[in-house]
Image 1 (cartoon, rainbow over the protein chains, first blue to last red):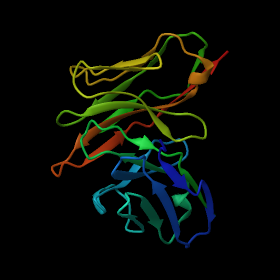
Image 2 (tube, rainbow over the protein chains, first blue to last red):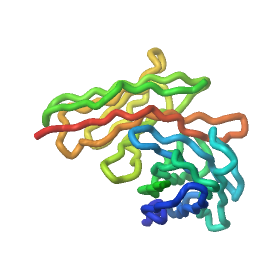
Image 3 (tube, rainbow over the protein chains, first blue to last red):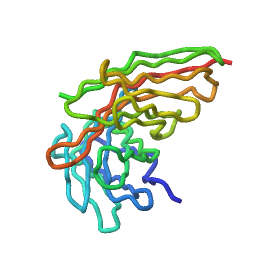
Length: 114
Length: 115
């Protein structure tokens, strides 16, 4: 049973560039959430996708956008990268949107912006 | 608004010591509560959860009880091992009017267990 898989595992970009991160949810899951985790900090919620639509959004600028595909996989896009965007980006999947459904996390993509 | 407060780390213990990591929350409604663990270089893993008051979540020797009267969900383990060294995150989950769920996270508590 494959868990949540993310790609790439590591990425180095330059300020001003654009980046796309990818996530495949755990088998059977239909909801994908993205989080940003800065070094030494807890995860910060970016947005959540369900039925190919953005359902919730955290306090992140429009430079952060996403997409969910019919097979439930998801992409996170960040435009006009800033140094402060350097972080571990975590994808989490779950089944439905009930509050008791736990999230399953991937190992993350480490983004470094220079 | 909703928030989670965890005790600050790092926490350093000797093997077989008793562990408590405090977590308190502020929330409207009836949230679900979670503890997640992040081992070095890895993503977050669900450790245990509780979905209503007085529920006790347990896993791998860790326990936490959902205390509505004190708005707490403290993590405990009777005898820690070196392999328990990790960062522990307390989180709560609430639903908004659109039935969408979001996790609110504490800042994490780093635990180091020495042999």
